[in-house]
Image (cartoon, rainbow, N blue to C red; front, side, top):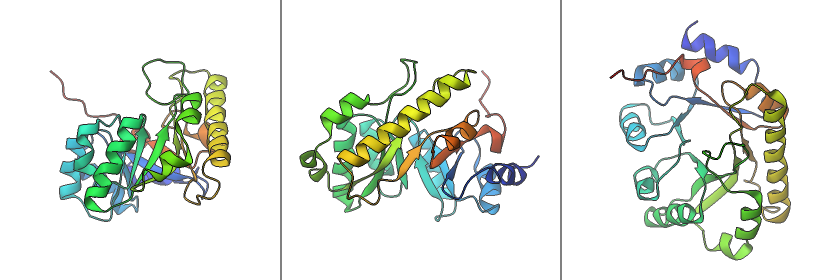
Length: 225
């Protein structure tokens, strides 16, 4: 099937409350344009340089989501245009994004990345860390950040029960944070979870944003050595 047919297939499974982020990392601009022509506007990248190259050459109404592990020293390059940073996993990174936002007078939308998987290699805050870290004082000290919700990645496993349990955990953490720190923040609405292999489970567990790549674009084009 073509990229546009793949998109239609996925969109047929999405409720109106869930946004599709087409994960375009490693795929060429020509593939992104095919998806864009099929009315897909939100794309996810995980390498700053690749994102900058694509931003320069592709239509300016594309919403670029940064979905990888973002290094503090790279924030300044994407701060002027990034639509949403999904993986904010440290106080240091929060402060850096706020600093770069202040320089250009732009409030930058972010998600807090929560570690919900059993794999140690995944990044993210624990719920205990966040409850300790977040406070009205901290939030008021970051005026150039708009915390829109949470993001998490489930364990890479065939076991649906494990995946479902981890997604439930993320949704519960979102609800706790909303209740304790973001009651009056109408922008704190996003639960970004679910990828090509598990997005249908994620939607059942309350995902508002799914990050789907290979089901849209096919296998990634890694360069052979």
